[in-house]
Length: 65
Image 1 (cartoon, rainbow, N blue to C red):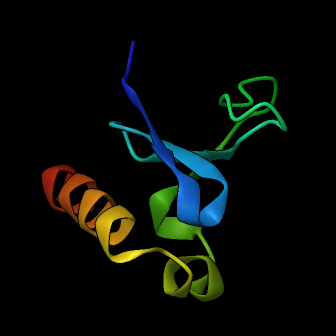
Image 2 (image 1 turned 90 degrees about the horizontal axis):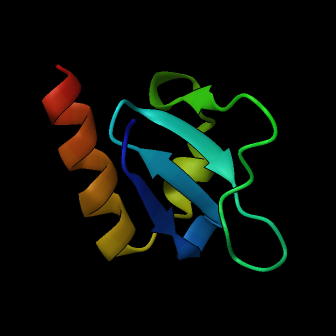
């Protein structure tokens, strides 16, 4: 199982395998639907990341190669 990291600035979570998904209204990851790979997220989504969340995303992207 992969770890899920909450990205509050964009109302999403990211897994350590690079999959991204939305948060539910209660702030928990919505795992009921398949996520989107980090390489396929929109430019707008990336631009809205806070500095802290951007560091997390970049670290995961670097680990994935």
